[in-house]
Each structure stands twice: as C-alpha cells, then as structure tokens.
Length: 153
Image (tube, rainbow, N blue to C red; front, side):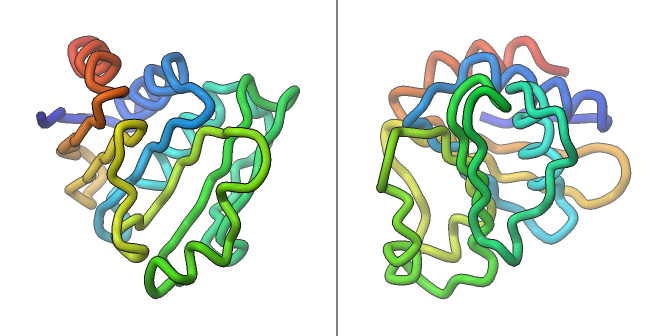
C-alpha cells in the first residue's frame, strides 16, 4: 500500500497518527535514501508521544532511549546506517529490558526487521514537497495501518 505525503505538515500528521496507535514491542522500520524524511518522521512520532525537547539523530550514538514520563510509552530510536549486518545488531542488546517501541532507520543495513510487530515504511522522494511512502504492515499492524492510511493526506 502506498501513501502520498505532500508536505511537512502531512509528514507530521503521519507521525502523530503512528504515535496514537503505537505500542511497546512494536517496530517502525524506516527506509529510504538520504534526505527522504526518515528522521523527520521519527521526530514527529517522538514529539507526538510527548517528548518536549529537540530530537537528535541517533546516527553516531546508534540508539537513543526515551522513557516515561518524557514520552507516553518507552521508545528506542535507532539508526543502523553505520552498522554492517545482523551480528552488529545483536551486539547492541535491543532485546534487553522492558518492551519499547523501536523506531529504526536504515533497517536494511542489518538484514531488515520484518515480523508481525513491524511496520516497514519505505520513503521515496528527497525534494521539499511530495513523498511516496510504501508500507509493508506486519499482521499486528495491518488494521492500524489501514486506519492511518485512510486518514492522512
């Protein structure tokens, strides 16, 4: 299923809609070229979950955790751009601790993150206007994604 995003406001609306239905244990996997809007969408999700500060990119830290009360649910924002395979992902220990929403940029760098709790979003387009988002919704995301896609323009 594809979704057209025509503006920054629409990207923020998508982030808000995702935040409203996200649950601990979910994965939102964001793919796309440099400048496609992966970090913009991740920031929109975190802001909609209640984070009040500036959301930095996790490119160098690799993972940035956010915990209540600064956000509604625990979140791990990850950027796998600098990783080189699933073995390096295992070393990060993302499975340790309480379940959290994982927002993962560049999941293809670690072999992908497909599963029933995963919403894979491929963002295409790097100019200042329109983006095309292609979604692969895991079984636990299917109904939620249908609801989101029908309400965001």
